[in-house]
Picture 1 (spheres, helix red, strand yellow):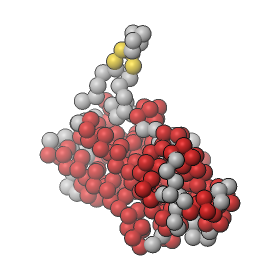
Picture 2: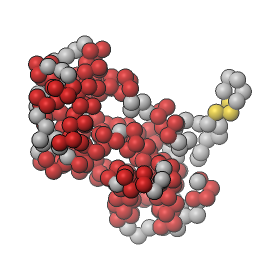
Picture 3: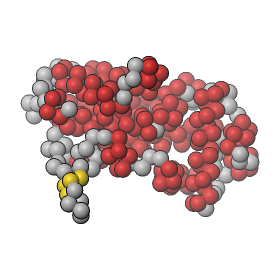
Amino acid sequence: MLEHASKSPSGALEAPPWPQTLSMSAFRAAWPFEGEPFWQTVFEMHREKMQIKNSRLAVANLEKIFTATFSLATEKGFQAMSLRDLSSEAQISMGGLYSYIGSKNDLASVIEGVLRACIDRVVEDMNRAQLEPVETLKALIFGEIYMVEVLRPWYHFCFMELKGLPREQQQKTLDLELRFEASLVEVLERGIAAGDFRCDNPMLLATQVTAQLEQWHLKQWKFKLRGVSNDVYAQFIFDNLLLCLGCRQAAALG
């Protein structure tokens, strides 16, 4: 069930944390996928594959390397980008660059691995919160929208550069989508078993919802043109999903 707001030491009411509170500010407070804490996490995830062991130096340079990678991938495409291009854009020598990555394939693998780890952590946190099925669905939808907003360059790379990656890495990127769909299916089946939802084909419904969510990072220009915000789009998907499920709780949870 949704938790009630608690009181701060000053006596003011505070909203419960993510995922009980579904807002971008609550999401960012729970998941620091930006700034130094995030790059420190990236370093910890892949430090064994790097020659650099100095955390402070590595964190600063990793941000330069990945920011430059995303910029070049957008400008000329990842396949057309060379490590010399990356060295110049990141302002790190070729020798220094090789201390962090051995090849472009290694770089692509790290990007996919970081995004996968972030998604897994958010989903696992929702599972630990033990929300009711309808609340879990809403948290999954809003969480995906917020993650796309915060980690947009990572999503864009994995989905737009997919064709140029080795087959093994292509499959790992495709698995990101399948894993998210599996999370949706699990919640749908739990809600059906509890009598909260009615659905003859949870798998196809999860596929449809995933496609709607993917529009958010594949067609951003369209939503900006029409003035559609994160929360408006997430709420629209959620409300329509509840209608498909024969559930009338959209107004109560909106």
